[in-house]
Amino acid sequence: MVSRFSKSWRFRSLKTGAMVILASAVLVGCGQRADTTNEFIDDTEPADRLYNEALANLSAGRRGPALEKLKEVDRQHPYSEFGRRATVLQTFVAYRSGKYDDAIASGERYVQLYPASKDAAYAQYLVGLSHWRQIPDVTRDQENSRKAIQAFNTLIERYPDSEYVADSKKKILFANDQIAGKEMLVGRYYQERREHLAAISRFRNVVESLNDTRHVEEALARLTESYLAMGLTNEAQTAAAILGH
Image (tube, rainbow, N blue to C red; front, side, top):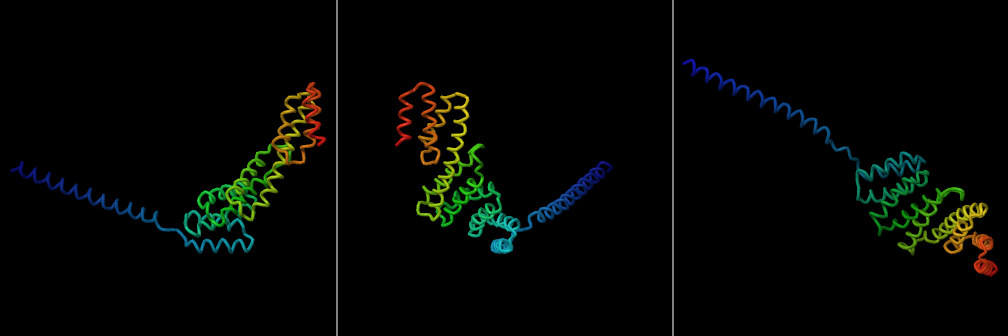
């Protein structure tokens, strides 16, 4: 009798414990679902509203807030028509605000995503301009000159009928002139130290690879001097003849 009561009591205890655990699990589950629901509340805003707010900020001269709104369009509505417009406008606003690295990043992204778009040439042009605006004087490294040339050449090759081609060619000439100026600066330094081989290498680079710049005549004259200093008469005469011509 005791044994039967004991078994019955243990069964009821197990059943009660199971119900308590189940109830607790349900409560915990409800709490988790509530938290999860709060986390997944849709906070996206309509693309047209964000885009128009960006335009309104631009009209009022508030580039910073405009740029943030454009980034939100791109973030919340990627690959949409408003997202496409926002990306190229974001490139323009970043460029006009002097945030050249941001302009380069968004411009390159636009061209990669929409290479056949009517605004692709403009985005590529802004990439080139962003590098071009960062070209330093000839005493410093000319990496941005090279990047500008590359970006403008890409525009000319991909979009030869673009309205931006003519200006791109002019800016390429300027960037090449900066690179040539740097080469001449280094070449003159080596020449003064009587390191004529190193100087000749720099001057020849200007004559052979940067021959559409204003530094070619000086490069030929200094080539002649360096060749003569090394006793290379024939090479000196050739350089002098080209200079005379």
